[in-house]
Image 1 (tube, rainbow, N blue to C red):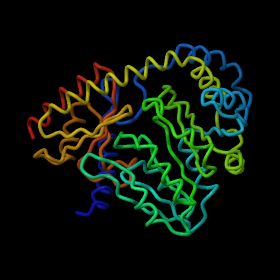
Image 2: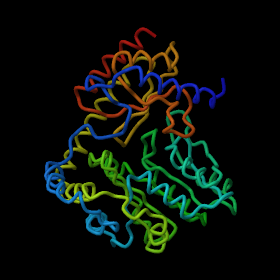
Image 3: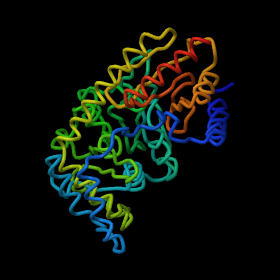
Image 4: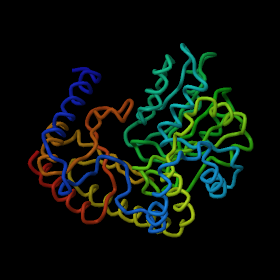
Length: 363
């Protein structure tokens, strides 16, 4: 069976399985990259105070939030645009800078929305395979060979989703130096990594940094994403931005989160500790291969098990464990046989390890 047919078949199957099970609180949800730790108490307090204003429209320019983000990132607020999650930011970038028959470059396996947003506007996608064994790396030489006069955007996910590893800043800088394209670096997992390409904005006016407050600040349900770039690029993106795209409560909550960084730094440390714990124990399981990660998730390879990945997935979901399989629509270019696992709480991590051990022990 071809990879495409396998993916189509199992996406339908995944949907059916989820519909068959009532995903109640007793399910261990390790399929989405969210925070299992609650937002800051200051965030909850700020949201409670904001309810009385929901009869009014939000600030369409998100001036207060952009000011807070500017302070956090040490840039001008004119260099920031806010969106309804990073997906909307990605969509706005594609709609601003792409036309039919233009080209974009992605490094697979990676987040699928880069490809999806490009195809919506009629652009073509060039995929550069970037994973060998357990190493995901971007080769600037390959990029230079693959681009053409029609190539407008190069998408780089750093740290990469779903592999979880970071891209050396030297590789990104080399791509900026050797191409004339817009280079978008998706840093939605920046706070877990602690390294950024933000400093390269002073040198390259074609660079766009995309960030999110979903994973790192526990605000996934409120949908806060933003982009940082030179003011000319930001001004162009404003032309396609919906007027009231970020609601009032989300704006207030995000500002409160940015004012309580000490709380979140403690959260990020806890995630790092649990990631190390989960990595070590998964590495001790026979026939499981774990990829090194700098995020709040791990990618594991189950292809060495005697049972098929779909059968392993079935057994896990029957045990009320939900992971994100390689045939999910979230990924571009991820081969069959992989699961992406959220780094959760110690209790849920242990439950997952216990059930996975039973499943692969019977493989």
